[in-house]
Length: 205
Ligand code: MP5
Image (tube, rainbow, N blue to C red; front, top):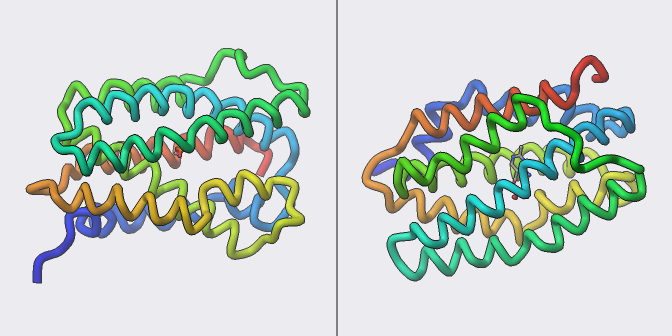
């Protein structure tokens, strides 16, 4: 039986992958005890990431080797407008400065995303899959232990909805078309995801 390339990536990173959904930031959010300050740190950092992510995804639309892949990627691009508006509305309500200088971790991860298309489609697609699957799994872990009364529900729902999960599955199917798993890029994304949570959580959780 052949192993799907997306599954081979996840299997090789299994230990660190498990740390995503059990990260103190994720657990504190699930248990409704995330300090507002830590949420604010995350919101500003993740807004910077998503702004870069949209440009990254647009480059991937251009790089895609066939039209079906382009359909999947362009569908993801469509959802980002509402997501960015969610970030901006929440930041305004909380009086957060979205233009604050990002940390080196946030800058590094966003820059890695944007640099990855230079290494070609297999690498860039693997980076996309890693980032999206990481958020789907982490926020699904939050969803399993919370409900719509959470003040962070719209964010929880954004990355744990059935629709988002189906899109991540579509991206996984594109990864499965790659001749071999690009382990190095995937492992790098996992390290960045964990560093990102550590960075925004700080000493707060
Ligand atoms: C995503 C994100 C998911 N927003 N932030 C990090 C640190 N990793 C992954 O990307 P998107 O564009 O919000 O679906």
